Image (tube, rainbow, N blue to C red; front, side, top):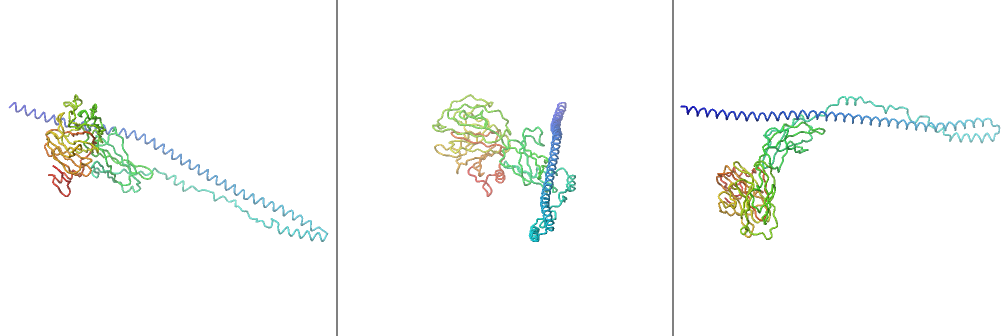
Amino acid sequence: MKTALHNTVKVNNRSRQEELQRIISTLANKDDEIQNFIETLNHTLQNVQINTAKVLLDLEQEFGTLQTTLDEMKDSMANKIKQEQAYKSQELQNQLTICSNALEGSEELLEYANRTLSTKDSEAFTKAAKQIKDRVTMAPAFRLSLKPKISDNMTHLMVDFSQEKHMLKSLKFLPVPRAPEVDPADCLVADNCVTIMWSISEDDKKIDHYILEYRKTNHEGLPRIKEEKNWDIIDYIKTTEYTLSGLKFESKYMNFRVRACNKAVAGDYSEPITLETKGFNFNFDGTTSHQNLKVDDFSVEWDSSGGKGQENKVKGKENKGSGQVSLLKRNMSGTPSPKRTSVSCRPGSGRSNRDRFSGESYTVLGDGVIENGQHYWEVKSQKDCKSYSIGVSYRNLGKFDQLGKTITSWCVHINNWLQASFAAKHNNKAKAMDGQVPDRIGVYCDYDGGQISFYNADTKQLLHTFKTKFTQPIIPAFMVWCGGLSLYTGLQVPSALKSFQKGNGELSNSANSLITLAQ
């Protein structure tokens, strides 16, 4: 009775502990949310001060520019009035001079005519009268217009700025476009591409373009103010959707936000959204590599002389950064066959409880462990790579073991030395495959389904599938001799493969399936 009661108490206490742990986790998450919100408010408050100072400065500059423009217009118009004054004055002065000269000539002729009237000599009188008549005919006074050429009116240069004053009094702040709305349900993440779709209010019909901003993060939910990565910007988008392609999913999530712009100003950002962009990320693990493979974070190089291995930097097992890792080839002249090469062993280092690969096992493992789920990565070989293998293995692969020759490793092997071969290998058994070796091979791993498949990465043609039941975590594994490989990680499982796997549970051929060369 006491034992049963004691067990009941223990069960109840355990249940309360679990409930308390959930409450603690909930409170911790809520505290984190509130702290992030407080940081957001502080950041917003700080931006209010900064942006207020900015718009006040802009206002001062705009009014200063307006005043400068008015002053320039005033000077220009005043100058035009003065030019008009100078023109009219000059014309009137010219006409005045002509009239004065004409008057002077007319007065002189009048005086001469009066003197002629008092002449007693008939012959002299006749001659003088004739001259006076001729001079009167040609006198400027009789050809002169007695009407002013220029009016003294200046009303055509008067101004009325009442309309402009009304316009100035109606000055307003610029109309700002409303923030677009982004619905995560309308967005698509597939094949390492992200398509963002948004909508805008019907009232905002004068949108010129949109700005899309995005950044990678490992935090779910709203963007963190203290996020270490800056926003990347895509500008001048003319439609209400945009696709980012060729992405490397080196983080679990991506934040997105959009703002609309008219001809003058950009509006507020949309509410940011967070989309999951998780890919399988790993690098080569230099602590496992054969001494003839020199490894660092981003490259592995075959060295026939047995180059000194380098310690790989400590990395996380998930979302460490994707990209291309190259295994560079060297000059292959005089390089011995892997079957005939004897390489001395070197003390293990780096990875706990295992030694580096040695002997004829020119192997390096990936530093990412697969314990569940579906994953995908690709490998590209150099054109003249003489021998290489691509596959997976358990972590207990022996230091002298070769890929495909043990029950704990699965791979495809390509040999271009002496006699070419293309085969799937497991447990020291090889299955020859027909067809040409692809330049780039995709590896699909369904851990829970017990499946390893190899594809032509370009055409998504199925090359070979291993069906098994994994009893331990597995690791990507590679062998390279006299050549090089390039590794591409941070990839999603391609949609074509998902469709194929869904529609071909038993990997049978169909109109929509990929061609099965071997199984």
